[in-house]
Image 1 (cartoon, helix red, strand yellow):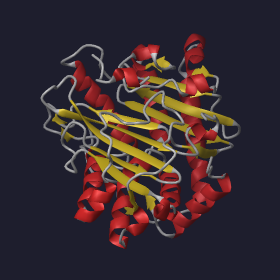
Image 2 (cartoon, rainbow, N blue to C red; image 1 turned 180 degrees about the horizontal axis):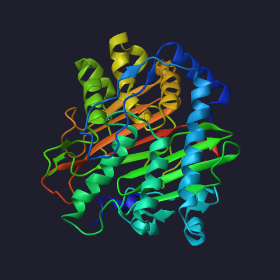
Image 3 (cartoon, rainbow, N blue to C red; image 1 turned 135 degrees about the vertical axis):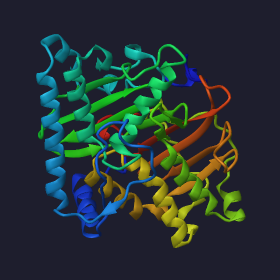
Length: 379
C-alpha cells in the first residue's frame, strides 16, 4: 500500500575550510553532541534531542577518525559479500544513482543497492554497522532513530503487505575511501540517508528523508517508541514560542499535504523565502529555532552534526520559519518549514495509510548547497 499523493514523488556552497572552522568552533564551545550508542532498536526507547558534552579532541582529528571508521566498516561489510553481491553494492556515483530514493515501500524499483532481506545474519550485522558508524549517536536521533524507523516498518508489516525492515537497501556510490568522493546511500520506506564523503571529510549530509507510521507504539516487552517525537516536539516548541502577531506573519497562504522537496524534487527550492524572519525574534526564540534544527542535523556523525549546527546558527538572521494548517501539528495538513541560506527542513502531518484513524509524519532535511555533497546541478 502506498502513501497518499504518491504521484508527486517520485550555489552558497560551504567549502571544506568553512566546515573545518565551524567544527573547531563547535568543539571549543563544547558543543559536540554525544550519547551512548543504541545497540539495537530493542534496547533503546524513543527519546528527544541528544544531550551535549565537551569535546575531548580537536574537531579535525575526530572528523578524520570518524570517516576512517565508516570506511573500515564498509570494507568489513564488503568482505562478507560474494562478487555478485558486491556488484549490487558498489555502484557509480552518478546523479541517477544518487537520486534513486523514495518514501514509498517500492523496493528496488525506486532505489539502488542490496536488499537487507537477501543478507545472512552476519552480513546484515555488518551492513548495519556501516550505517551506525556513519550516523549520530544521540538517543532518538542518528542511528537510534534509523533503527526505530526500520522497527516501525516491521510493525506495519504485521498489518499490511510490502512493509518490513528487510525491504531496505544499502549502496556505496563510488568506492569507500578516505580519498576521492563517494556516498553512503541507504533507505527504504520512510527513510533515505545520503551521506557524501570527499577526501576523508563529510561533504554533505542531505537529502535526509524520514517519516513514520505509526507515530508511536509499544512492543511486547512494554518498551515504547516514538521515532520522530524529538523532531515533532522541537517544531511544536518553536511555534508555541511565537506571539500571535509573529504567527500571523509566519502563516503561509498555501496548504500542504506533503513535503515540497521530497524524492524527485531535487533543486526545486523556492526562489523567495516565505514566512517570519528569524532576525526579528528574541534570543530565546532564536534558540528554539536552533533547537528545532538540531534533531535533523544529528543524522550525521556527532562532529559533523556539531559543525553543521554551528554553521546554521551563524545563518539564523538570514533564516525564515513558516507554517500552514494549525500550530498543533496533530492534524492532516499541519506543516512547518525552516528555510535558511543552507538549511531546509519540512515537517508535515498526514492521515494514516495503514492506520487510517491516525496521522503519520513525513519530513525532509536538505541543504541549498550541499545536497549530495554539491556534486550535481539541478538548475
